[in-house]
Image (cartoon, rainbow, N blue to C red; front, top):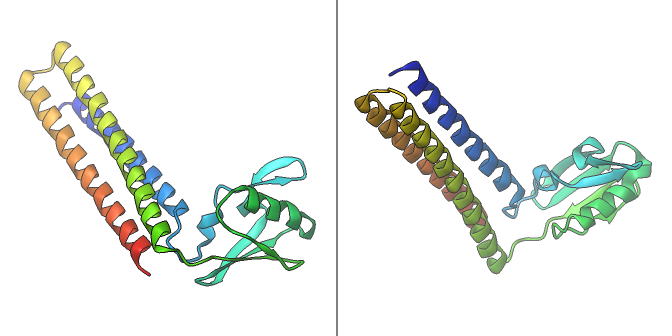
Length: 187
């Protein structure tokens, strides 16, 4: 395999790795009934005029599977953090206890679980589309290389390798989705 062919495969693999990483990041945002500090990732707090991620303004932990405790680094910012959690529309209602916010994570209803599985499936499908786009770009690159003088056999092998890589990553997405689905549906 030529250096250019290997480069095409490496860049396709990098794109596919990014799709998997993005999918896992999106799955972290989908709660499965158990309290988890990552549920609040993405919440932006108006902190003295600047928008900052909540994890930079407070300590977030889970003392038990049904609660999240948010302890601000600066006690004066507790109201801004509370407001940001409410505005994030995560379905949480924080209780202000003066020095910390206590969030009781409600158990998921069967209907909500099904909605979360559907949302997870959509995220998995988006990741598969990203994988296929990476495959298409790599195949286009291989065809272009063939026009520029790459041997026909080499181009065919390259396209086959790209397809194998695509199949491997599609299976990875299916496995990640299965785990998330099982996690969501486990009561």
